[in-house]
Image 1 (cartoon, rainbow, N blue to C red):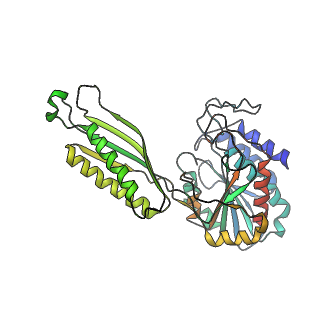
Image 2: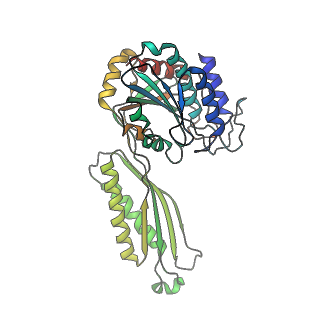
Length: 367
């Protein structure tokens, strides 16, 4: 099985594609699925699904993301990207290989499984949330999905170990954008202007202070700004400032209250400086929360092979959360042991770890 996993992963690694533009990737996936005797269909643009009908009352679903990143690969591997500027730097080639191999196991054991099986290969996890389009197609309801599972390769965790946790796992995300309009004037006559740079500094100071004081204090959240551009000259009052950052929290309530507070802060900063502040916060991905009941069931079912318990959730985002809004779901992390982090030009992993993920999926077929 390791040779098959390695072949799938390396074939996919050579043809990284971005977002919804995945013609070679989807053709590769479809070609393998067509040999497995399942129903292959396309519920949303650039997605591929495989339904294995065992005549059961409901269906268990598994998801893999197929898109890559706009990264120029520097691994030097023999199977390196053949698309300069694109790279599978987040392990999605491994996720897809894992699900293709699972399809072969399902074909061999379908009549003995307690559920039908749905394999979902989705685009655009790294960009606009391809999971949302698949969910909105109604495919989970149409095939009576009762549970969904997913795995992400994770270099910060020990090689070959699987980790997870009940409840919050990854954060609700949102991009914060602030556009500030002021009035330019020479610095020696600054009273005639409205300082958009000062307004930006005022906004940032109040925003960070709010993020630290928002109750409950023990609930994790993140508000950070990484971009600020203002002014045209050192001796002129700035007429325009742009600020960009990210807002993340593990509950919709915390995220919403922080978003509302940012609106009030923008108004106060504008009033104090005489500038006009326009704030927007994108919806981003929902928080990823593992279903507690399903998690408890799989712990009992897996016994000593159950995943290790993550001590705390991650502040990163993941569009697997869209599926969990429709059906109970559990998301796992499969350690690759580093050393290169996700999204880096040097990211690579030993495909042997995929055997651990495949064994977990095989056991979950029987849940």
